[in-house]
Image (cartoon, rainbow, N blue to C red; front, side):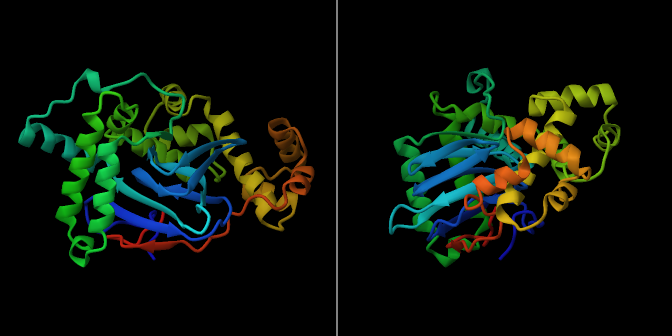
Length: 306
């Protein structure tokens, strides 16, 4: 089974349909490409700190690159089912050019909405045309020929983007267009790659080919907070998950999350979550799992998980 973080051999969007037959708990994923997905059955929980966003059957969603925490929940005896398209900024830009040159479809300011407060995920109830589109995709994915036809995948991706952009009421239009910015993707990928490393803000700015002042300004634009605060929050979130899902000691988890001073780690954790790491583990010992859970990927052109 190929992981989404691995290099993709073909420069085309990836179409994936997969099933989760049972509730396996929250899992950590590093999403390396942009994606547009549709929930066909069940519910999907996406966690941001202690907040939770719920997607239900019939929801269309966009998910940006980065670290995410998901829980896919079946609907009774019916498994959770989702179809997703994964793509790069270059692939999306090529689709937009195809719409412009071949079909004379022009992208203008009317396609953009105000910036939302959800930088990584945005969703909406799918309208009938989108529902029918994903129903057709589900049917196509039963055919061996479609599974290996990269031209067919690209054609369907063009159709999906057109359906999103042509719906004036869709809040996803602007967010999808923003994902054509390959420089933004490169910046965010660099940051996510080094979250748990012992690296200074100055070193990060150098890796991103920015001056320190420019880096801090761009970082706030992408993540809505200063670099040090955001990095600390991401490390504490990972620590929170490790406390519940592993038997590692508090000091080991602090080291794993690049907060090696145990007393400082406990102080930061208590400030963020209101309790010490040990008490948090005691209260939530059965809630979250970051161990790989069996997910049956079916009928996909590439057997790819997040």
